[in-house]
Image (cartoon, rainbow, N blue to C red):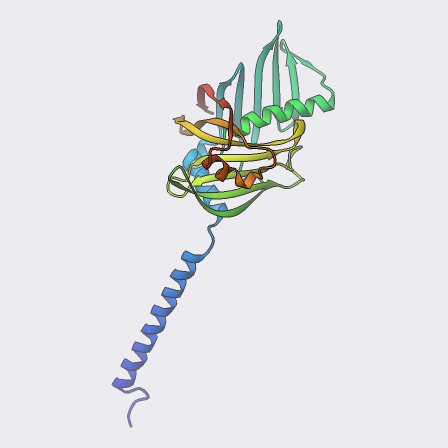
Length: 259
């Protein structure tokens, strides 16, 4: 009595199964290549290539304009410092897990809540931009992929960042756009819409890249778009030469110490 499958039927089944496997693999390949890019993965890679674990257990010092700044993270705790001279006094502002503190000539002073929030936000803002892309994985951050964009003959992932009200700080309504290189995974441009001090929109172009202590630092050319320009369209306005250059954001005397 012949077996359940003779030689011919076995070969036929094998060829059918092989065709099905090829079809499945091709379908998966096409599906993967047509799927939208994952903004979380892009941000993860950008952070890893810009410094990764070097952002933790680290102390960073730099000068921005006429003030000195410090960034320190160790064991889940952080401390951001701004040091400057006002008239004849030395002022030291500190933002940490415990909130905001101001010292004048080494002595802690009381600051009314409204001014404390203003000083805290000012220190946070400088540290935030200096240490990018670190911070883009904070719990209150929301990321949306906006597609790919070519600027100055280079292709970028375009990612929109917003913030939850809870944990997003006083500026939780601000909106950021980041252009991250599709090949090098580095932030080349950013734009943001802010609402304090009358609000507005800025567009920044990164330049003067350097690595100090394994962390990537850049300076920025700061641009202002025309009134009514949506933040998402500032890349087109830049390409068309419609932005007004306002200033340069330059970090000087950068020092990085591992803790």
